[in-house]
Image (cartoon, rainbow, N blue to C red; front, top):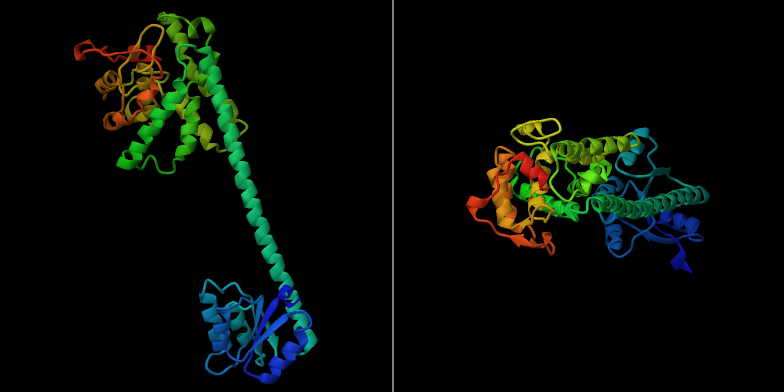
Length: 380
């Protein structure tokens, strides 16, 4: 039966105090009487009481010295301590509380008062533990719910991406493959510390997820243009370019209901700037150099690489190395020079399986198409 009782450790060098304290508490608690602080620490290696009643004025090691040692040990520091003392001045009481005691009981103490004070503190400690357990369980529930929401959000994004690709029948799996390319390039940036300062605070997982929306504006492009089995006229191409603006407007509508959404901030940057070119010849804003946000410069490279290595109705897929060479020729004109160099370094890591079941052809260097903005955009 005693095993279900809370264990109280009563530490005092006075035998009479030990007897009075044990008699007052034994009908409710399991009580261990201890004659010194040294003996208390020996016992604490074998058992953990719910509460320690600790005399202040003891030989060899007083209560203040003992509680300092106790609170410095991570294994036992959380055991609550109540000081027992014959001192009644407020400065001594304040010293004990500052050292970590939860209460002060003056001696000589009455048995019923001692018991009541112990009951109160045992109850408080129980409630603290219950609250801690509740908070822990609540945090686990929140974490699980967050994971569920994240998975659902990702499924919604995938469904939206599939909806866009379902309309644009000639660019299937484009979003998934650009995400793979982007992951490779981001990993290389982290390893080499290229644009290290600009990457501070980036949430890479969220960034990769948001990249799926870079072409979401295509959902507003008319079928006769989006699904045209051939090259676009100038007027049709001008209309196709508007998918960037449509995408930004779509994401901005989402932002109206969300405050400070990093996910939407990333998504809008990808959608808005992935067709800008380093020399200012891109669209929609004709930004140049580092005026183009870094996420746009990143997506510009991976977007074109994926398009070049994929089959389109008006062209077969280019071989991996041919696509890499085309992008390298656009260094400093179409693409950020530093990112282009990094792309070259990590290009061998790009999975060959990105060109799933498509026909490829190799071209001699002299036959490589000129990487003009018009050419690069039409491959998309």
